[in-house]
Image (tube, rainbow over all chains, first blue to last red; front, side, top):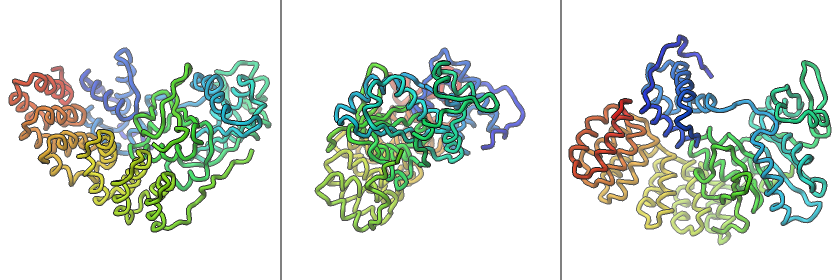
Length: 289
Length: 201
C-alpha cells in the first residue's frame, strides 16, 4: 500500500454538494453513514485521501475511488474506521449472545452437546478470546455445554500473534482490572499474556471467506461473528461470502456483522433477527424457500 | 479443541456430475451443485436451463452467483431475460447480479437502453451505477437526450447524480427544459447538476 503518492500537502476545496455525493456513495458501497454534524471528520479524511492519492481535485479523487483504483476503497474505509481491535469491542453483541442467542440455540440441544462459535476474521485474537471471557463471566450455562471456539483469519502473521495471546494496555482497556488479574499474566514490555488454558481452548486456523473450497472445512457453527470485513468486498465477493457463511452455519444458527454492515443489503439468504441488544441474522431453520 | 472438519471436504466431483446435480429433486443438492459450478464457464448452458425452472429463491441466488463468478458474455445473456420477469423479486435479483459485472455488461448497455420496453430501460439505468464515470455518463446522456418517458429519465438522472461527470451537464440542462411541465424532473436535474459540478443549485 502506497499512501505517499501525493507527498506535499495542499488545500483541497470540497463543497457541501461534493460531500453529499461522497456520503451517498459511501453509504451505498459500505453502509457507513455520517450525520451532518460529522462534516469536519468527513472533510479531514477526504482531504487526507485526496492528498495521499495525488489527486488534484475532489472530482479526480471520486473517479479513482469509484473504480477502486489501487484498492482505494480499502484505504478509504480504513481511514473512516477504528482499525485497532480490542477486547469486548461492540460489547452489545457479546451481551446479545448471552442474553438471547445462546438460549435460543441451546433450546434445540441436549445438555452437554457441542456448541460451535466462529470468529472470522479474528485478526490477532481479541475477538475469540473476548467471546471466551464473556461466556465464562456472563453465561451461567457455560459449563453445561461443550463449547468450541474457532478463530480464523487470512493473515497468518495475525494468527501467530493470536496464538501467542500477548496484548498491551490499549487492547485491554475495556476489561476490568479484576478480569485482567484473573485471566492474564504480565510479560515483558509491560504487556499481558492471556492464560494458557484459554490459549489452548481456541483453535486458530487460516481461512479465506471468499474461497468456497477453503470454506468447506468449516461447518456446523451455531454462531458466527463476522464483523467489519464484508464492507471491504465488492458486490460479487459479498454474495459469495454470504453463501459461504450460510453453508458454515447450522440451520437456525446466527451471524453477527459489524455495526455498519447489513446482510439484507447483501443477500436474501438470512432472516433478520431483532433482539434487545443487537440485530443479527439467522440461517432459516427449515429452509426450502 | 478439535476443529470439526465438514462432511463436504474438497469435492472430487466433475463439472459434468455437478451439472447433472442441478436436476436433482433435492434443493440442497441443487444448491451445492450451483455453488460448485461457480466460475466454470462450461456450466453456463446447464445453469441457464436450471435457473429457468428453479422454484427456490435460495437456490436461484446460488445459480446467479455462479453465473456472476463466470462473468462472461454468455452468463450475462442468461441473466438479461430476467429483467423482464413479472416477479419483482426476480427482476431485483437479476439487477443485483448484473450490477456485479460492470465490465461484462458494458457491451450490452446500448441495446438495453434502447429497448422497446420502458421498464427494461429504467432498470438498465441502474446497471450504469457501477460502471466508470465517463462511460456511464456517455450512455445515460445518450439515453436522456432521446428518452420520452419521464420515469426513465428520472432513473437515469438519479444514477448520474452519483456517477456523472461534468460532460453530463449540457444534457441535463436540455432535459430540464424538455420536461419543464413535469416539475419533479427539473428539480432532480438541479440536484444532479449541483452534485456533479460541486456547486450549490
